[in-house]
Amino acid sequence: MARLTLFIALLPSLVLAQDLGVPTAWREFNNSRLFAERVSIAKSAIDTILPQLDTSTAQFNGIGYWQSANVFASMANFDHLANSTTYKDQVIDGLTTAWKLYTNFDLNLVSSSISRNIVYRWWATAAYYAHRAYGDVTMLSMAVTTWKHVSNYVVTAADAASGTQPNKDFKIVSTCYGETMAGGVFWRPTSDDTGINSITTGLYTTLSAFLAETTGNATYTNAAILSAKWIQNLQISDSGIILDGVSSEDCTRTAASWLFTYNSGKYLEGLSVLKDVTGAAIWKTLMTNITAAAVKSPVWQGSNGIITEGASKTSNNDGVGFKAIFIRGLDEVSARSSDNSKLQILIHSYNDVQYNALLELAANGTSYSPSWPGPAQGYTTWGQMAALDVMVTAINTNSP
Ligand SMILES: *[C@@H]1O[C@H](CO)[C@@H](O)[C@H](O)[C@H]1NC(C)=O
Ligand SMILES: *[C@@H]1O[C@H](CO)[C@@H](O)[C@H](O)[C@H]1NC(C)=O
Ligand SMILES: *[C@@H]1O[C@H](CO)[C@@H](O)[C@H](O)[C@H]1NC(C)=O
Ligand SMILES: *[C@@H]1O[C@H](CO)[C@@H](O)[C@H](O)[C@H]1NC(C)=O
Ligand SMILES: *[C@@H]1O[C@H](CO)[C@@H](O)[C@H](O)[C@H]1NC(C)=O
Image 1: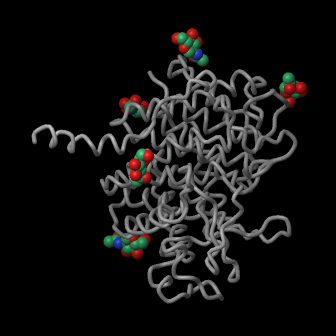
Image 2 (image 1 turned 45 degrees about the vertical axis):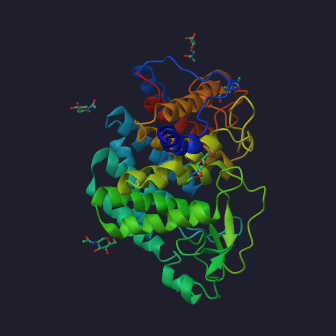
Image 3 (image 1 turned 90 degrees about the vertical axis):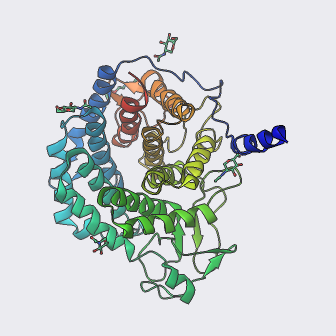
């Protein structure tokens, strides 16, 4: 009887064990650089992109609007992790400029080549990071105001029940594959666009969770939970990574080949904050499982572990920015997992694979190729932008 009880007591931990081992096939997954050197490498990488900043528009030459927000995000996160204010003025000036030029950061993208999507959510997150790094309350209020703007494109529980959404002119489905559509966030504001996707919903989950943590206001907690559940219920693939999108009109999924790092990365960032805000075990387990699956996914990397997504040497593309978002999400998971050293080791090993590849295979001085397995090439703003999150994350994930 005693043995049976012991057996049963041990069972859950055996069943829930997730493989957090570091694959030995990964290329150079360690790093012995000290803190000051890691800070210096990250700072040099940022300083190499800064000449491209047009302060009158808050845009960086050579990359798109959403990607420019992510350069400011990396700068704020650099200061957050290095405990400095090196880029405070540039970050706050840049976000303030964008805010003045585009109400709610909402650049109206109506060109024929870029379909308008809810691109301003990236800027809202950058504003949150700026608040976190510098304690600036105006930045926080920009994040809150933009959160409200994005909230107009969330499927509420009432919307799912009624089959209508105030900003959409078609009948939406209440459920897909047996799961409610409540919590999903529309990708594009256009009234006839049916797509709901993981990145928009993941960004909303993350921003909601950060605002919940910062303000203690349950409105944000509830929003984060509803959207996190939507992804949990509908968007996890058989191999444990996050799928792209679903039509809210007929549940059609985006192409099976649409597997992008940032969908897992942004969701992981949100889950890491949500587990701390709620203390609920489910979010921690989900975060751990998706991290283990995503860093080992053959979809976007070679067996050596180096990410190959968005590696075009000749033109900017969205994919090059995706992998940066993935790494940033992993950094947040690591920062919030001091109770799980195996998970932290897995993440720092993974980032070191990318870090060492950039420094050894893709570097030309302090500029980095968009192709992380190399070879090095001349400077491109998109390649530089993508490398920043790896450099900034290495400040945190390595020690001392
Ligand atoms: C990885 O660890 C080995 C053994 O300690 C060391 O020689 C090597 O320099 C480390 N690699 C990096 C990039 O720090
Ligand atoms: C961060 O910097 C401030 C001001 O320079 C200093 O007072 C504080 O001790 C630093 N914190 C850490 C954790 O290094
Ligand atoms: C909580 O946040 C929501 C959304 O921003 C806001 O409408 C509400 O007034 C806030 N509640 C409190 C008590 O501040
Ligand atoms: C996490 O992974 C374990 C092991 O594969 C599995 O048993 C468990 O159901 C998963 N939990 C969640 C919440 O995904
Ligand atoms: C390094 O960058 C410079 C300036 O962009 C370029 O002229 C040179 O060809 C690059 N070197 C390599 C090895 O790609």
